[in-house]
Image 1 (cartoon, rainbow, N blue to C red):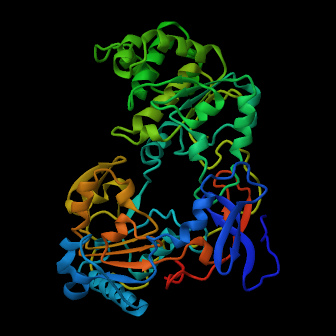
Image 2: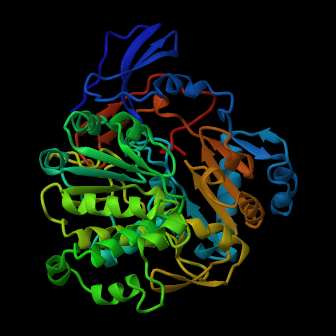
Image 3: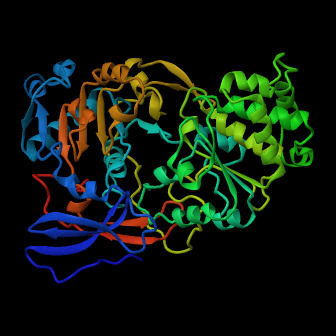
Length: 518
């Protein structure tokens, strides 16, 4: 339990804990303004972003007041082509909320709940009370329902395919203590833990880092497979193997061909613990398509020499090996294949279930692989509740769409797509409620998104900052940063290290409100 670090408050000086995605910190306020942010002693590797966090509430891009596009105020929904071009008009909270409530009532009445897209990627406040995504979805559930986005940009492909492969979309990684005791080779495949473990969906103590320090001095050889040299690879002095981007499957196929042709594939494991290897083997050896997936074949695609592919294969087969896969390699077309292939490779090596062997898919995030603490966990509000008002219009189309397909949905209402073994029909979205996220920064094909963003009749964005997404809204509402409201937060998504109190340290900037108030 992380308690408040406080001195007797005075008008010009106070200290307290704040909870951020980059860690639990001690915040010092002088004359009503944040003067310093420091890590708490328990933080194993304080984030390099703490100085920037101290400046965050005062950023020039801060949204200080409710605002509405000028043309939207004058012409309403007929002005949507001017999103991103209009100047903003400051309005009162009452006027802004009345506009939004009026639009919600109109869209529900004329089109029904399937015309409202309630999306939030939610990376603003990590607290459970002011969770932007949870609160907005709860609001829309209570209002009559909404279309949601499913999956995430981080793990959409791996989270969809792995339940069919190993029974769960996010397998628990082998404990770091077991790795350090038993592994002889550690492969960082598309993973850079020092960079990506800096944040957590909740908050973090960065527990992973002492294990990396031990790995560095352990004598265990590490191999960094990545098109670019990673910070973790540099820190560990790892051997660097740099395939061309997007060719990970070809590299693994070349390795598996070598395992099979050299007689080193673990036939007992494949027979007793897997299903379908015979079909895969015919593909691997070229019997089903006439193309043997040899190291030479893989070399042409990956840019790694055939000799190097063979050497790597035998090194992993001859030593207890833990393959640590990152998520970046599945953020491509056919992104379900790389991690599916990784578990196939680990199965052919036959080390899954052996101490320090096999494959893990979350060592690079939220201190995955660190021990999980048994203790109380904070529950949160349910994002979906039964709608209170009756549905005035029947539902049209699917109740959800894949998170990355919302632009396609806006542009093509009524279109049917295949998703995870089902057929989905795009609803006709008339109103968008977005909070705590910035799809203009992470959605691919930005120009296509820009076209799609002009299709809905009304777009409302709640945020702390005037992001690109907010600039292309009709109505923007100013949300508080974590330094302006109190909250409570679990520490460690994968580790359950405790519970942290977040204290309101400064007065709200402008007329900003907490997500709960909004």
